[in-house]
Length: 211
Ligand SMILES: O=C(O)c1ccccc1N[C@@H]1O[C@H](COP(=O)(O)O)[C@@H](O)[C@H]1O
Image (tube, rainbow, N blue to C red; front, side):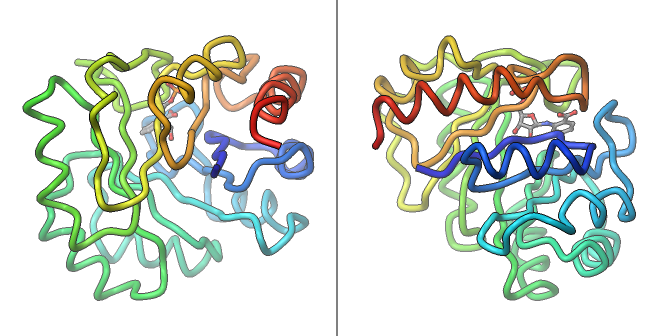
């Protein structure tokens, strides 16, 4: 299972989190976020991590040229679109960045909204489901209604996000069986400052089930 730890801002924490078992690190490229990082900060954070670790930039309602410039300059392997990007936007981004993983995040309001994921399938590689919050785009610590997701089985791989913590992770994955999980505020001391003890506990619990 893929495990993405998102909202990393510090190089030492990148290295530690990769060595604890993360398969992907996420960097917030949304200027209004308290976890926002510049190209230079991403470069520093990924300089010493193994090539096999995915490096995902998180964007929300940015334009294609801005995303393309940041992806290339920061040497990212993937883009997470966390705003209101349309299927057509994903299609255009694919043309601009043909070899980059495109992850479309949906902040799920209800079951009907969940069905809109079908419109994206042909233009993306991976889906990500996060909780809806009326004021914040992400990193809210709010969980989705997992009951609604029990029947969710798209033809693309998908990450479960939203309010995951070392305490609820085994319940979540046993109940829903996503292809990957994505955690941010649930393994933090404060926005952008990861709690390495909590990250360690997360992998201890995952390894007790998945090894
Ligand atoms: O973390 C942020 O600040 C952020 C800002 C803008 C868009 C997305 C953001 N984070 C994403 O939110 C989800 C869930 O976070 P949490 O575990 O509930 O804290 C995750 O996918 C982050 O990539």
